[in-house]
Amino acid sequence: NWKAYVIDSILERCQNIDSIVHVNADDVLEEGCVYMKCSDSDAADQAKHALNSWWFDGQIVTIKYMKPEYYHKRWPAARLAMKPLKHSSELAQLPE
Image (tube, rainbow, N blue to C red):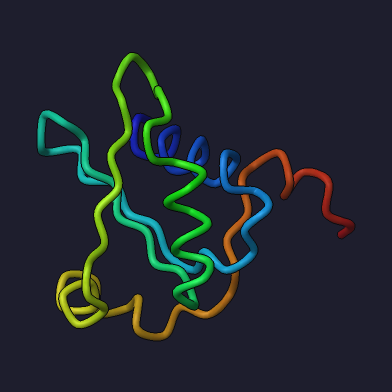
């Protein structure tokens, strides 16, 4: 599944940022837009630094900021997102 692969790859790339609380990938657009919500502006800056100009699957990643009100209009459930997301290999290492 392309969407899960992209999201997991982004979370892995940003594994040192523990404030990513929501991610969604738009697989309709040809360029493959991915949207990420961080719990604070410092984490958003760290994510931008980690991802901007990164080559992923033959494409250069470009980061743009989105105002929270636009993000929440598109994904209303993201308003309540507070738990930091982890990529799959980190989840496999968590104790049960």
